[in-house]
Image (cartoon, rainbow, N blue to C red; front, side, top):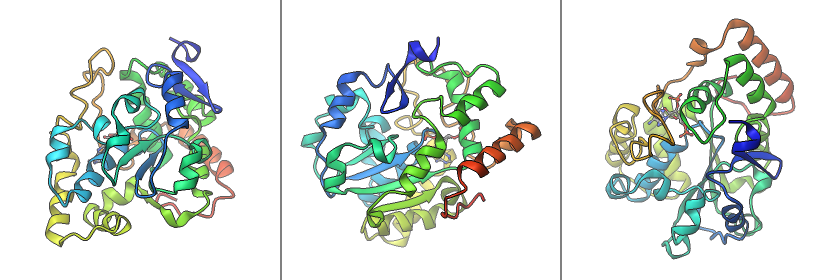
Length: 287
Ligand code: A3P
């Protein structure tokens, strides 16, 4: 199926119509944030699910009850998804934790008033591309990626769900009131998960013993998270996500793009990256 059949254009980007009907986008537009909410902001395939495991464990002081009983999509719901409107989020006790793939400028008015805390996870776009390529091939609500070279052009042009990686990342890096935003990368999580857990806990002003942080990091290792049926999407219907084609928790590594992109594709990617990111001062770990 085509983009016209599967996607809706919302605030200038494609959103998959199946997950984001007009009434759920309206629900989000009218949503009331609280200052003590915590929002996990990601471009798709950058480590959303990982953070949906880490943050609840930090908040619970390491108690695994919520990550063992609630699927990630209800535990830390996406505010733009249709499920958000049926989860009674208004009744949830503080601090509530949500996810969003929205760009900064797409956020609803209440976000700019309440200024909740944001954890923005970024990932090397070549690995985001690689992860997306496999994911688009197994998720029926997305346009089949087709040949890699074609999908690469779509990805670099932002003709994919939630638009351009470049626009997404730049929008959050240029956000106002940065003191309520924590920027962290997938690569930092991979490099030192325990240290990342400690930094996130500090940002959330949650005091945890070293031993608890160690336990959280251990639980959130790829090999362990893969076994959690509340986080590995085993509960998603096969006609929606066919994990026999590609698992949701696929490889969980840094640099898989080297196995995916040809030399020419990687060079083209780098050239586009250099141009689009030329005004960005932020020092990414992958640069
Ligand atoms: P790969 O496809 O490269 O393996 P999102 O949750 O934003 O959709 O991102 C999915 C990506 O994060 C997938 O990348 C997935 O394997 C990876 N991921 C999820 N949990 C992880 C973990 N605990 N450790 C490392 N990578 C993880």
